[in-house]
Image (cartoon, rainbow, N blue to C red; front, side, top):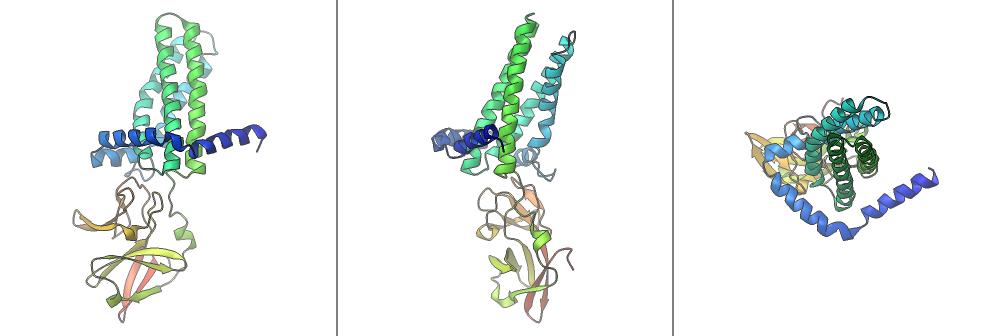
Length: 293
């Protein structure tokens, strides 16, 4: 890593630790959660049905449009096309920002500090592009291009912060991705059926992997105990019946997983919970990672 890139990374590391931002973070989080109260809206913005966060997908429109506009602004006679691309980027920015705020409101404190700066820089870029369009309409092309290039610099800075969130802080990344690759094949005992509380959530550990186990009568379900959103123990959560299906709800941010197949019922999680097949042999409960042999 170069000295310059190390300096940039250290600056962002300081943002992670900047607890002076916390009052702003708290107020913004409260406002976002109040504005996005409907569960169906939150699930759509998180990307529950998509299977991973929708925010990164949506960024393709504003970033792609604004990048193309920056190229066209360097080519004579392409002012109208550049303005059109800037407009498309501005329109695409709005749902992108909304999805980003929805994800941001359910992150850890250090992630939210970086995410807040990321969002403010992106909003500043949007403001520059709006000013660029205004200047162009007023006939001041030079000023319009200046605003556009300033916006382009800011949107790239926002992109760097977004990459830090995704790749350094793992915001939006599944916390259970390694389980299907590392859990040993075959059947493994987790105790006697009578030792499992009926209707409660209990944690069991097999080969270093924690499981959340739910018994209802003689029926037993088992999922990985780690919430795919931010790694919270699901065994500390609660059982919930949704549409006639048994589910487990994460205690941290409310992510809800269906016990029968591990599917995400409600976000902010988007990756399913690894599910384990269960059998009872002479009163002993045994589990095997679903699909393993």
